Length: 544
Image 1 (spheres, one colour):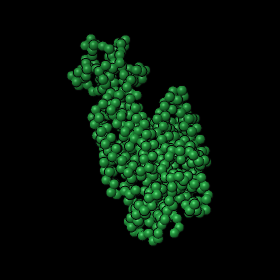
Image 2: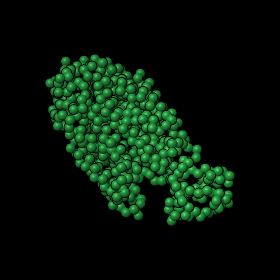
Image 3: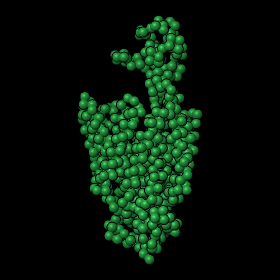
Image 4: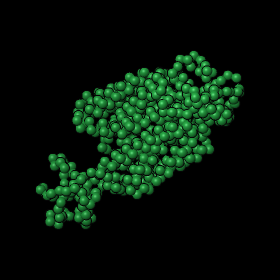
């Protein structure tokens, strides 16, 4: 009886039959709340127009029936008197007894030049009636504004730790148990976050939330790519990420109708409770079981998949038995990603591309996406640009391959950044349109790096490889705002030059990677180091 691979087994069981479609539909739903976790700060941490609260002014406003705008115009010091109307201070107030001024209910203008000002003493007032963000609840403005950044920074710290931990956990103990553990942690941490009373505790819980969410999302992605045939991997990977874009479009609608940030947090977290029911509907990855020498269990699951697909395994299969003292150990190790030449090359190139995608993607969003208009409409429009990227990938990668579109996406993004930096500010719409082309290119690169990453590592270390490389995405997410805002203080367009440079370098490095179109997922390190041998005889590598 000849030794075989799991891809041979899938050919008989069905590469994308009813069973895989059912699992795919269920697991894609995981991307919807992930979008809310990742970018929900736009609404949960929204900083509205604000100014110092003065109890005497509040009392006078209520007595006179003033609007908030009238109250602010008359009693808040300007920071730029030359404007029309002048811009009012958000962090300073007049140090004055209003009873000694000429302020009456009929006052239209009040000359307060020369009156001393001081920092806020009695909290703040917000132009955000009927809504609550954690910024307005905890008054995270002015000198405490940096604490808003910590809300997202702690999430990325959790992402970093979760990528490593769940990558190792999924490769050692299995995809399914990692998926379930992640969702249990997400459900608990998400709900606790919604009821935590003080901000320091919120940051701690937010870190734990990020730990579970990122690890579970990456584990699910790997599981999906492992249960479908070679010709379906790219479609499954892109559509799984496209559901993240769907979540991005749904989020502003939820935020518009759910006016309290805590209830929005409950809404984002609630799906993770439902995902625990997947225990009865999602199998373990047979490919992972084979890599752990659990062939009988893998065959049992595959037979069940074949039955649901309306097929039947017609012949006996025998898989290679791996021993832990062979070159491909039965348990994943971080050293496996670096100890051989091709594995090392793949790891460094993929890590740089993860970093680049995060830096340029977030940098362009922060630069172009913040228009100062309606936050809900602006966010919705910004999310729509991600859909053409997904369709371009689906159209090109099976016709052209992975490597060329991946490299081209980075290079187009880099070129757009350079061109945008050279267009004068007077050509506003031209500058905006070219920047949007850059956003389209880097979105393509971001979506491609995920599934290309899974195709360049053998099964026993695949989840760890994806998780370790994707940690550079989280590092990039932390670095991006500092690159944008600090360098823009030197020269407004300098961040675009940096973004363009790293995107060009990333595109060039991608050309050093092998083409994976139509190539079976590698099972061992030998498949990575000697790819031509496997192409000549797919079974030879397993008979040695």
